[in-house]
Image (cartoon, rainbow, N blue to C red):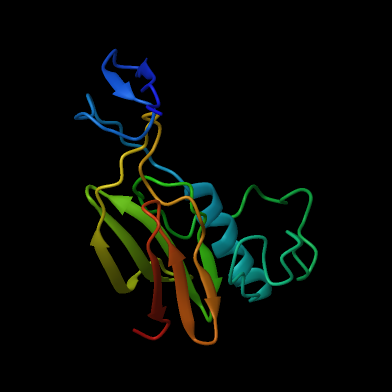
Length: 169
């Protein structure tokens, strides 16, 4: 039995198959993402020196168990320690052993970067090609945060590739 192919119009008006066939994507969008999360995690590492090695934190419950945070900041908000532009994706950063691990997409590559959590300085980078295209035209970057366990960093990219990288690489 033949299954008919449904078609829809993308935001740019281009026809695309809903079953996964792609045409060239019209237009590009860039965004800065995760800066707030990066700053919160950096502040968390300096305030409580607590690792946040995977999604929802060390106990996977989304709770911070370090010293209490101030509700009001006498003398104004804390100073920004560092800032970094990031690529596409929905993957939040994680922190382990003083390293902030950022998983995102830059152009046609999925990139895992280890940064010094206090300074933002690069420590190492691991990347590989990705030709993933989002059928709905929203974002073509990774959807899942890295996981740190047993001295390795595990990533699962938008294209379905699972990678294990040595944390000390």
